[in-house]
Image (tube, rainbow, N blue to C red; front, side):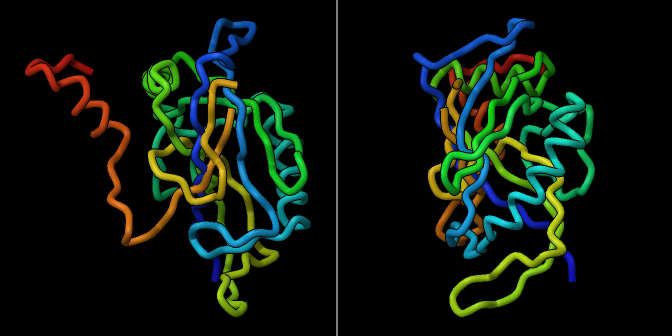
Amino acid sequence: MKQLLIETNMFRANPKSLVEGKGGNMIVEGILATAEVKNGNGRYYSRELWEREIDKYVSENVSQNKALGELDHPDSQIVNLKNVSHNIKKIWWDGDKVMGAIELLPTPSGNILTSLFQNNIPVGVSSRGMGSLKQMGEIMEVQDDFELLCWDFVSTPSNPGSYFAPVGNLNESKNSNNYQYYSVNKVLTEILCSNGTCPLF
């Protein structure tokens, strides 16, 4: 049975690698996903599966300038335009790592994300897809019916080595009881309201 599969990689900003695109928006680079390894969620994606989905995603989304994603992971198969924060401009392979160059958009969510990167705050990039799983020993193998939907930015990663950096690294979100989770909005509110006054959003 197909289910919503979320995998997150950490993406840490490197101030020396900040790059602006043609529109003056920040461009960040990092690891979007890693094939042929057990990730933090105990899942395994084959290289063949990622290659198929990446080729399709580039053809249908990246090349059409609509590889959009959100800030924080919704429990939905649809990208909600009012929460869009970024657009993936380029995807390529580096060994078994899927790399990406991502433009941060001047939307409310994109401005928050840009501010996090400018202040060298690590965030994760997280794939969102639909698919089924099969137990294979100690891992859950993602099956051939997997369909990649998009990548979102989140606060906690699950894919190994996936921190994103303004032109840097991405990771998967981890569903583990060993972690305490906070939404990006909650973290920002705590930071911005620490002096006793809170700006209006």
